[in-house]
Image 1 (tube, rainbow, N blue to C red):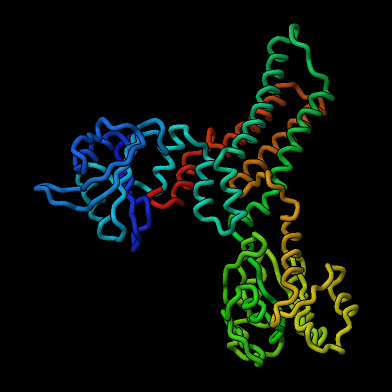
Image 2 (cartoon, helix red, strand yellow; image 1 turned 135 degrees about the vertical axis):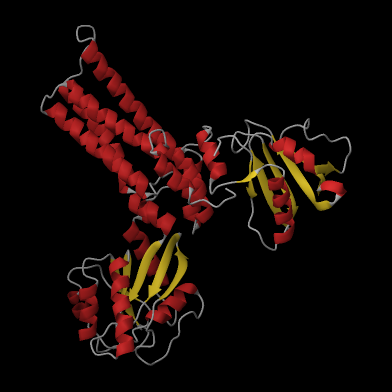
Length: 461
């Protein structure tokens, strides 16, 4: 793979649509386009037109055979997505037109782009850093408006700017330390307290970024939420209520749900991957038992459990089994069927079984009541209620791992200063912290890491 060789790929999904787009980037993009394009206006010469202009005409093969009527956009380096010459051919939608244009472009000397190669070239040519490249993918895959907002903030470089400020402050500290090492008689040394305060301040800023990792990942990946409770408690009815449609079968017969049902829903900007599971109970047949085993596995892997109890029956032995299964999990407790008469239920006794967990939320999944309270509880449990409009959240495990290394290096530097180790030890720890920050933005990221990131992209991006 040559860095600037000519690549091409569909820039839109192939299928029935008004318009499909084929994108070219690299050396010779405009020349290739000119060789297969006949403008409707004879005065147009693609080799001489201004950058970022659109031109109506025909793509044709040999012997004047027209392939399609197109709008062709010429964009000249360096003010393009890849900082190379870029041509976008907007042809008629559908598989056939786009494929015919792409086949002709490849026949004329371009090669098919690798996954993410357009964005990778933007990164390699310095137009974006690695966090912005990841934000492109996050924006494409966003599952909620808030997730898209966070991706847009990262795309504009807000995370990169924050990392850049940390790197800049580390550089200043290193310059001071190295000057003290090399010119001890000419440079006024910082006191131990001053240096400890500087390192501690940096550590607090890194810790603040790490604090938001869980919420950031929720917005990017979705919160895996499992509905758990005994049979006929109303889990499937709650799923249908949240989805706003009859997705799960609801009957009066206990044990109707025997397999896993998973659906996506957005509640107050939080994307949830909701899993409806088989009812948990002791005495069951073989088929239902397999469903319960699957339910237990889903509970183990879930980020959040919505534990449901029946207001008409009170706490039963099966409910106690449910409580035991979700022990230690993030959980919200729902008292369903609260619209019905439930003289047998003593709320104080039920809450006593929850061992100090948050109070029960009374709902009626059938009537739709309690949805607002449930949404507030979900926001609180993921910490979204404290998210400001200007917040920058860490959304990827890669960023988390790098920041944890930074924190470890800063802690080591703090300890080295505190026990009066030579400044060379402090400098080594600070250099390692700075290098770890560079992994986030891409300056010091390993080639296999970079390759892995761009392999997640589609071919045309």
